[in-house]
Length: 324
Image 1 (cartoon, rainbow, N blue to C red):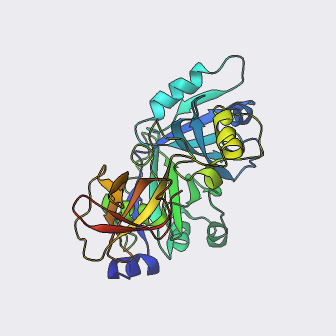
Image 2: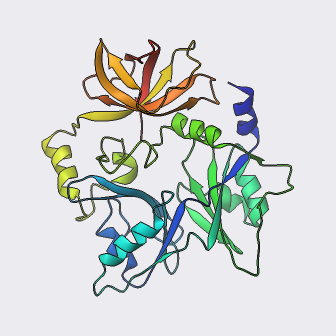
């Protein structure tokens, strides 16, 4: 275990993530509208709970992934960076007589991510929330404390939370943790390493508009198999029930040989038994082990935990698990 990871595990680190998109769905039909579009169960959400989901094309390809949070009077959505305005427009185009208003609240809110062993206690202290309530939040459970919304997430294997706050011209919140002893700000590289270690694919990096969510390992996290129809469901059901769940490729977690010190570029070819079987989508140096780790798509015939793959440089990487 690296000293850096031990520090995170025992304390906390933070990063501002305001560039991620945030949408607000209001109106009596908001839950029903989203439930009919996305892959997970929105209608069954109660205030204070959330789900991770995908929005698909009729061909079963991903338009986006999103986190949906049910509040007392709305549904909030966190979407990938740079997509909020386009997604708002696309949702609006699907509205006919439904009582739903979609608002892009990205610019009127700010957000931070806090991760580490003391994350719950630090988040509670910074927001004034009840420490026990924060610590008890399930994944995508959320609560409000004054101007703050606290959300439990699964961005890393450590306790991880997001803090959202509304901004207004008369109230500059500045940097939430400015001048505090902790949490220490961490770089995008560290966050990528924590994400890859947890096997969490990122849309626009590990998932694209050509991705079928089953390829990215999203079945358990993002897809309800008991809800009614949603866009793209026919393709998903066909793969699961007629195709035995088989897809051409799987997004896998990889760990490179200890001698590897150079982080491979996205797109680097993966070979098995001398044949090209896939490519890396994202990679970083692990803050846990110090070894180079990666996510990459691997043809199903070679996507076996324990298999050794090779990069063009000759370096080897072992498949250590499925992503998702």
